[in-house]
Image 1 (tube, rainbow, N blue to C red):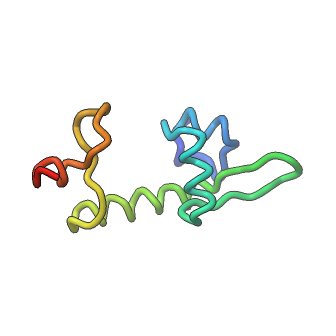
Image 2: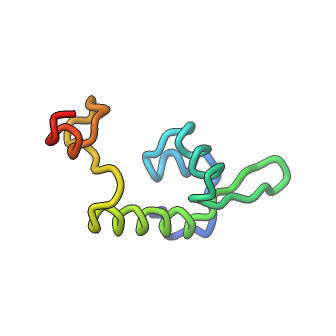
Length: 86
């Protein structure tokens, strides 16, 4: 079952399915990039809002806006800044 097969995911399910870390997940929720709901004490991520976030990120990267990730996972610098020498 893929991430897009469900309407909502618990935080642990979302972490496993998306590959996004816990801190980044809560940052995305706080920034309004992804939506979540509380059902009792359980927080559920609205999957469509995360898929929409990914689509926005891909559009921005295609347009040359925003940070382009380095192919080196250990690098904290963006490819653009590495190419410019800054």
